[in-house]
Image (cartoon, rainbow, N blue to C red; front, side, top):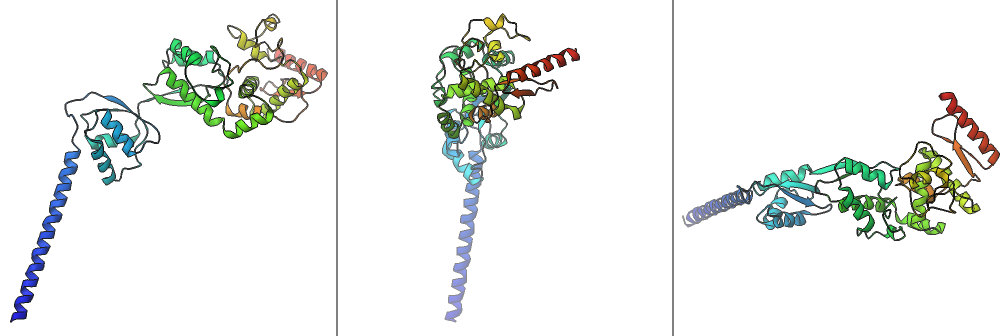
Length: 354
């Protein structure tokens, strides 16, 4: 009889304990649901202004939460971090510039940051563009104020190692605004746009490039200048290193480079055809008159031309001219008389086509 009563008491105790646990779990679930619901409310439901918020690349959830709180988008960075962790969203947010509002719920903000639908604009600077053409294009497309852009080119603070040898003045960054397609924030300033292009040059001009520059006994400015000459002289990838060899061979011989593209750069307006009078202009970029390289690049070279300048082919070529096939390819030779033959063939092909 006593044992039966003890068993009943034990069962009742277990039942009561189970009920208590169930109530605790239910309370916790309810409390959690209440917390999540409360935490998801908009910071200021009636404040519908849109605020541009920039999330830099590599920013983690904690950094994003701080940025949102500082910009008055959310009430608590700690709550945002906790919600992100509970929802498994850590590492899923994307960098960029977003238009967010204090009237948005936390879930809506999270959805936007995950979607990557950023406020950006895209522009392209082709290989071989010089500063003048780059400014023309970006100004015409509404990306820059030309005057402010030129001020940044000449005196903006861009502490990159590759610019230590760049000539000072209005053409200081010629050759270093790397040609590429870029996505930048809609609020990007002229400084931001220039810095974005310089960062791309910095990514392309690797430690290997610095080491190779030293091996060649050249400055970075000289390498980029040679690369710019290659870029303007040929668009045939297989020829770039060969054209580079001609430039190095002429420099080694003390022979004037006589590259027409440098004359075009020196002119106020480029011409379709140069005259003999053009070859006599007084300019440090006139390679028909000066010895050696011009003082700086004449355009923005692409990666292929930079690599050709760093790793020229080994040839004895001194001359080249467009071939009679009129397909953009050149004929190369070490013999001046052969060069004249190629030149006449090219002229005749032009006349025949007309």
